[in-house]
Amino acid sequence: MKKNLPYQIFISYRRNGSDAHARVFYEKLKEKGFSVFLDFESLFSGGFKKNISKAVNECEDFVLLIPSGGLDRCSDEDDTLRHEIRLALEGKKNIIPIFINGFKMTDVKVFPEDIAAISEINGIDCTMEYFDAVFEKLLRNLHSEPSDNYVYETLDNVRKKLLSVEHDYFKKWACMKVNDFLSENEDFFDGTNWTNPHAEDTFGVSGIEFTNKSIKAITAVSDYWQDNFTIEYLKKQAAIVADGAVIQRVFVLEDNGLESAVAQMDYQHNLGIEVYYIEKSNEYIDPEWLEEDYLIQDDELLVQIYCDTHQFKTQNKNNEQITMDSVKVRKKIERFQRILERATRYDPENFSLKAADK
Image 1 (tube, helix red, strand yellow):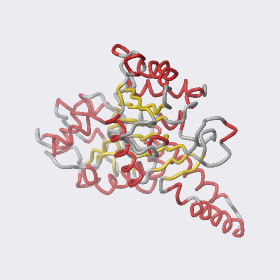
Image 2 (cartoon, rainbow, N blue to C red):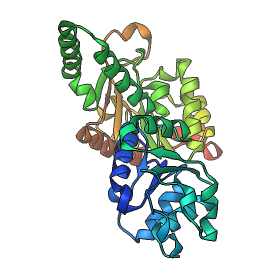
Image 3 (tube, rainbow, N blue to C red):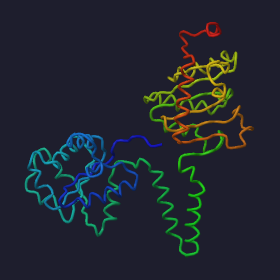
Image 4 (cartoon, rainbow, N blue to C red):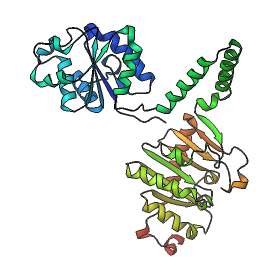
C-alpha cells in the first residue's frame, strides 16, 4: 500500500530554455520511484506561490536547471525562479545545479544578495547527447531514496535479464513466460491474494508495517493469541499507534470466555489499542458475523481468516484472503461498525468480572 508521501525532489527551471529538459528529468526520476514536483505536472488548486513554497519546503533535493541566460531575470525580486532558489537556500536543501547547453556560473556578473550562495555550488554540465551519463551523475548526488525502490529494482532486474538473452528462441520463450506469469496472477496484481496464516506471504507482521491511519479488527479465532508470533505482531502495532494510527480490536468470546481473555485484552490496552469485547451469544447481531475473523487496514485493505483454530496442522489450504476489493472492504467496514456499536469497551479502571457477568 502506498502512503501519501511528500515530494522528495523539486525541479526548478526556466521555461524558456530548459522546459524540455525538465520534463525528461521528471519522467526519468518518476520511473526510478521518486516523488517529484514539476509545476507543469504537480500544481494543484490554490495560490501558485503558496503551492510552490510548500513543495520546496517538503523536498529533500532541489534540482536547478539553468540554461544560458537562465539567471538574468533573477534581478527581479518577484521572479519565480529567484523565489524558488531563495527558499531552497533558506531551507538548506540539497541543491544540485544542472547547467544546460554550456551555461557557466561565471557568465553571471552580479547575483542578487539573497541567492548569491548559489554561485558557490558545483553543478553538472548537461547536453542531451550525453543525457544518460548526466542522469546517472544526478542520481549519485541525490539524498532521497526512491519511495518504491524494491519495485523499480525488480523491474530493472527483469529488463536486464530479458535483454541479456542472446538467442531469439530463448528471448521469445523468456518473454512468453513473463507474460504467462502476469496473466496467471492477474487477481494478485488487481489486489487479491489467497494464502494461509503460516505461509511466507501471509499478511502478518510485514503487512502491519504498511499501516498509515487505522486498523479495525475482529478477533474470533480463540487460540490466535497463543501463537508466539503475535508478540512481534503486537510490538509492530504498538509502534504504529505511537506514530498516530488508531487500532480498534473487538474480541469475540465464547459464553463465559471473558475471564480467560482479560489478560490479553489488558496487554493490548496497555499498548494503546482500543479494546472491545462481545459474546457470540449476543442476541442483537447476526451470529454468522461473530464467526468471522478479519482486519481492515486504512479502510482500503481487508485480511480475513477462514478457520476455527490457528494451529499449523489445520492450515493446509488457502484460508487467508488479502484483498483490496472495494465492495468487500466497504461491506466489512459497515459490519465492523455494527458490531462495535454493540460491543463493550474494555477499561481496566472500571472493569471487574463480577460486574461484567451481570
